[in-house]
Length: 451
Ligand code: GLU
Image 1 (cartoon, rainbow, N blue to C red):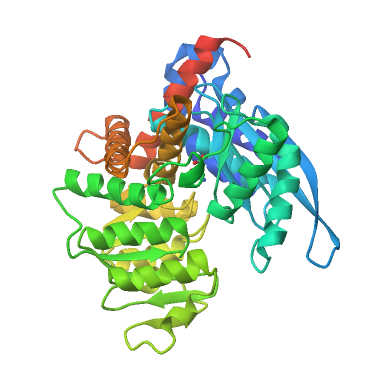
Image 2 (cartoon, rainbow, N blue to C red):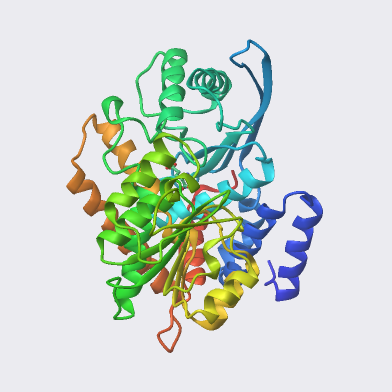
């Protein structure tokens, strides 16, 4: 088959825009990967002959279903649920579940697509998937969350299993939801097996799983810094978000001697000009992860904390920014402000938090920019280790899992360097992550034939 040119790249992407006009996040994620791997595909006959790109942008399967549940007043409530099984070329489908009222199939397609390459980068045998529902856990009682999870799993259980598809948590799905989902899975399947990860420690969960994404992001950051002969000590770090990823990233960064000055939630920015100390972070964790209350309450009566309603962290000067909230939360203008303020490293803890304009600005400025599929792979990596422990019917201790997580993040970093370093020694981590993540999946697809 003939080679393709860059005008073919444009028409390839344009065809996809025509096919999925209502899925901007999916198109954004595809554009990022396909643009980067295009020259590799042009140079690799097997990829061209096997139409790897056309095949990899179409998820293997999307299951879409109605979920009816009863609220505390006995009223039936209706949500939409999905599981997007993107690719099982290198392992069983794997990826989190997101509960959010404005969730769409397009957002889940983007997340599942990204997950495939992220999971590939971990070096573990994990395919890519994502799922979720339009359910909003905020303001719901525990009993309502349980009934919803049971109803959701009643449909989902047909499509998952330890060798088929292994969901985990994501936004809106934490330890509580995984517990209810696992309970219902076990009831329906009549099997105690690792069909979910992020489980509680008393029933097959792994040490370090809840910390893994945030800690992993900081381990990745440390590897980037080390390569630049730099370190975290005394660096000013701005973090967005106040969920599981943001708070554990803050915890690890503080432990490493950095000064973390911001956190945020949907209501606004919590600014700590002198930095958060470990006790203060502990308080924020209780407020956000256990009480599920607003971040603003932490600042009430405090002399050292300021809460700014409606603001994001990106106006605060920092050396390092860790966007850990949600997709497209940091745009071109924010990137400009950060660069003017002297930011030197931006490492993505959330999935695709920087818009294409922001990514372009950081790459142009040649600062250290770590894309999500590399930098936030720590969560799914420890999920992979949870699967291994479940299969072996063993549990490993915290020290072992922490060091395995750090090793995996350093290996991911090194894979990005191997494929992203230019002749002058500058590393484009976006290019490196996309090429290294894609190549393994593409090779597996070629080897397995037209399936
Ligand atoms: N939701 C997480 C992610 O975005 C973790 C997925 C998993 O552990 O399967 O990678």
